[in-house]
Image (cartoon, rainbow, N blue to C red; front, top):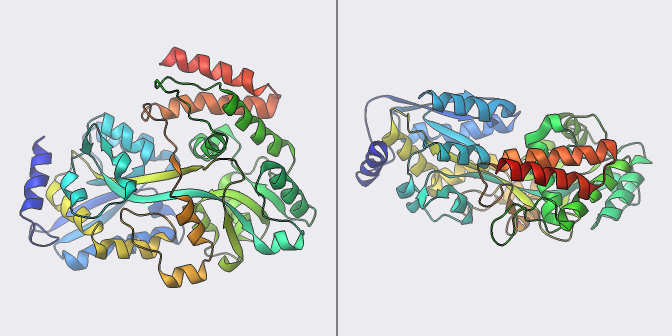
Length: 403
């Protein structure tokens, strides 16, 4: 409560972005600092704050994405860690549940936030502001599909047909995560299949429902694509994205951040990349990232001033230049220059209007545990050919035992 008060006091007295004249270093953690190309651009965007607040130095804490959750929870649990953390929604909820985040409601109120702020409000308290929202789409290589005589698919049978046509031309048909050793990425990707077939994971009373007919249909659809031979089984997602970047892949389901990675720095011309709605009956998912102030920060006032700048028109414009098609905290549009060079970007903005969080409502903190049981069931179906309904019934039993 003390630090929340200090942040409020700082914002009330804020005459400009900086609230103190002594030299201050703010450490900001993010897995994206390690991303090729994008990491440098994102860091350069926020370093612009030092021009506005010359007494402030921003310093990186770069943590690999696969290690981020465990490391940041350990650091915060020990009363250490960065002043500000940029994190996936699941990590955000875990830190919020542990009481490690500062109330930044006045920061959020300083800007015209869009709906990306919604899940940052926990029990009525705003504990972060949106950093980026990466929605999923069906992406494709226009030249490879044209050469194969394939149309952009609108359903699973069309996806398989298009993928097989591309394979017949010597390229990879479709890329997808498909291994439990990439659990955190796979479960978020798979939510598109689940939501696409009408899965909610909870009923009207908020009870977990993992073994519904809709869930079984989603798993069966993924199994059908897996068995079709169009997925390069055994390849991890970084390898698959690199091959897409090198003009070797026809189709994929990926988020806007991953697509920007694919469209940058490779032999694939971004103008040759297309994006379309997912080949499912219903809309899919998005990955949401928030930036929050740690309760352990020695500089909560300066951290709040930085966030106030970040959600201002100037800060959002800077972040937009580096974020490509990702939705931001405010409705700052994609630049005309970016849209011209990347004609696939507007499709992501449209899909973001109807996408859903990868977290299970009412079980945000427990989503990882629940979805591990689900993805173990999916793997059982893929590898052993277990009936989807039977495998999901086992997952349901595990969830009921845990919760």
